[in-house]
Length: 187
Image 1 (tube, helix red, strand yellow):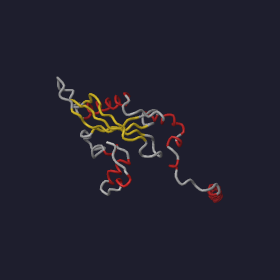
Image 2 (spheres, rainbow, N blue to C red):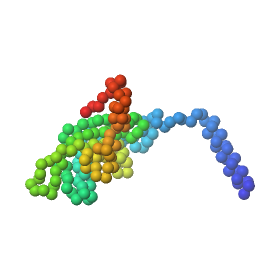
Image 3 (cartoon, rainbow, N blue to C red):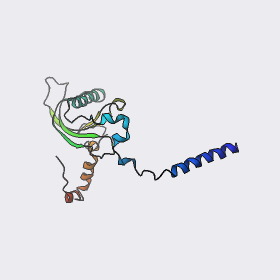
Image 4 (cartoon, rainbow, N blue to C red):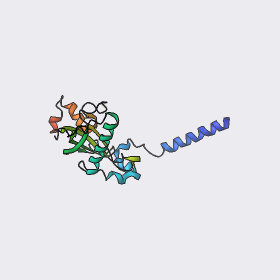
């Protein structure tokens, strides 16, 4: 038993010396882009769809309709999107999974009322991320409709789904730091 412990400690020491002799440890893995670190999945990163892609908008519409009917009684449905804009691409830096940040206006109506009532425009914030679909094999969309985030998962006002720099500038408006560098909101 004593020989086994001494042998294990000798092996542990040899591995430690070998690691120490191999040179300095890399300070951060964040010096390389996310797609270079996750080499088997790098093909998916180039395929982040644009904000007004029909597949993205239909995926959001289907998910919204399913959520509304399953949890909230189906009192809202998305009819169309307008004013679709990109507010950032890879805005969190190259360190993170590539995302395209978008904002649009969704025309929402009550499908239970016949004839359909007046459509109401609500802001929808969403991002499309690479490798966020099923098993990380395709893109995925994460969305929030302002005013219909009943569980406050992205509160306040879907603020959490926006790019980090935009959230940081919102905090710095009080300090007026961003004005010195000519930064301003794009919308």
